[in-house]
Length: 361
Image (cartoon, one colour):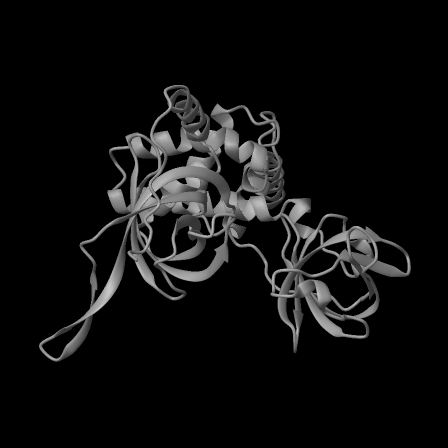
């Protein structure tokens, strides 16, 4: 009889524990929350911290903090402030915890449906899409889609090289590259069916392709900016028989026009080359200064022949600077709105334009 009573008590305890793990009276989904937190590589201590943030912000579905960009944006601000104010946490652990939360935000961003969409044939392209055309003999050109029909792709006649107006494209095999916004770059091979030269705007007719090669998956969110920057090229000098890299003492002015935690695009004069390394110094906000070491991956022309766009990857950036850029990109503390308001005020006061350094001679 005593054994039976013991089994009944054990059964009741198990039922009670399962009831609590599944929510119980307070409806908190303990099991789902902790299992999802472990899946995202958070420790039990960290999951307990995130649980408190979810409860304080009264999330209707607390476990959604691990995948919802909306809930994360709602909770990251109080979470990071709580981390900064916690005297029991070491500076290193504060940095680690902030890193993990921002990594979670980035993962949630790229799980959004808009980043999962891809196209598989040229019939899905849109008009006014910018194209890079490459032909083995003629070289590289720029074109734009005009019309996409069921049987053909209509584009403007490629331009950008000397005497482009008189080139004969009929039957040429060409490579076409284009960047699809919020997606990736695509490359495909095709053939020119016909060339219309007697119209006001010369056109090419291309065959459709269902063999699109997806060239790049974006790993970081970029935002448009208008930040003044100072940069110093890394130069090489011979010191005691050893070729060493040193940062030039001569600084130059530029403007960062888009920014991510891993790189930026900067406007500057024509003095730089691909693979050049730079020390870049800029103010992210009024109180946050960023200093990074970057390498130029690519260079693009602008409407001003004296100015170039430099596409730069950061090769050395402190964890604090990286986190500050991510907080700015995701606008967790509303810094981008403050930045926009400051720029509008500066525009009213008509400040001097950003000085873009030009090469001597």
